[in-house]
Length: 224
Image (cartoon, rainbow, N blue to C red; front, side, top):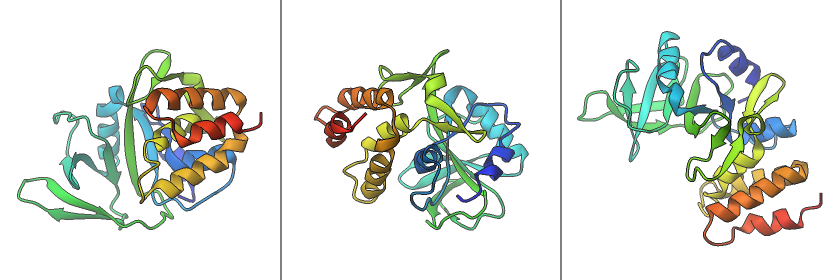
């Protein structure tokens, strides 16, 4: 995504908290582009799900909920049952999203053509939990980060802090299709993380992974 100003403007009046996640958040934190990004992920909270659906539908975007096994279900209002899956939306201008009908009404087989977006016409909402003061890591709520440390601002664009982004990416380190991107994101971020951020990430990795994660030693060895 080349024009993050477009995203900030689009969501400026949104009635919910949001932040850029994934590799885009890493690049914003570093202040430079380190690799190509095929799409944009927004980090949001479950308690805002209905507001997000209504907001996107009112702007004329199509809204879908992932069902698993490559299937998605189209949503037409926020009263449809919650099945605790991420949402994705696209505008009429989008050509990356391809839908194939299935036997079930409003359910499609979804394919995303992985080319870099030049304009903001596709977004995936990645849902998380929070309490009044903390961002809660999805896979283990014992891992938490205060909201003012988890959600940062870079040139008026909210981003998820790099240490939480990397914690999520650590769970895919052995996946052959994305491991190289996640490893690159870790290594370009490492020199720019504060000692406190490194310590938090190291402790979180030790809780999350039953076997010692390959990044733990590198965090320990990294200079202050």
